[in-house]
Image (cartoon, rainbow, N blue to C red; front, side, top):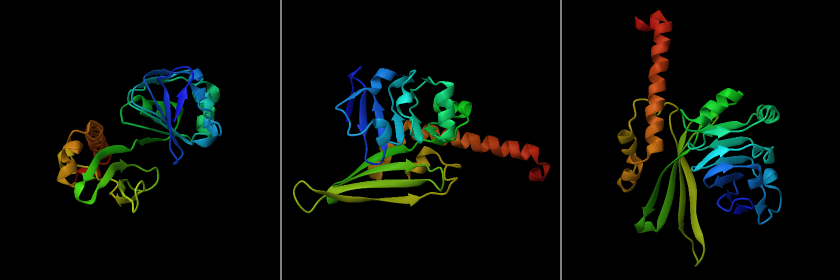
Length: 232
């Protein structure tokens, strides 16, 4: 974990997967990239995925300059603008940076305006506590630039000795069009009753299903209108 020297409310959460999350509120600025404690290597070299999380409203001028090697930029729905320069725009395109976020948000518009690929962000669905086995599962709906979406389970269980932890990970692949005709209620029916209420109250999932289905219907209607044979 790292803290901005400029604004103590800006915190960087580092993950071994190459993900660096930026948490806080308001506007990120160039000065926020000076952090403590001093990392073993620069943040720019250690991480290839940068996630600007819920609460951040703007990525200000100069902030992205500190991350020239990222391959993926994730923008929460609260982010309303990202300040760039022609130099940064060219670098983003040259590096084929993938932009991730929710549909119908600034993230998708930013990707379109900059000529970058866009992929919906992963959706944390629920935390499942299985008391009989002392197990805690983190359940996530994941989307992939290549390949089918899946439901990922990150499972934590007690280890064989005090202070150690076991568990593991597995994923169940979904059809690429799993969302077609699927309401949040139908989606929740595929999971244990323990997590049903968490899924039903998941607004990110609800928005995804509604928008994905609307777009699917619009695409089908456009195709039918363009091809008279489809109406026979």
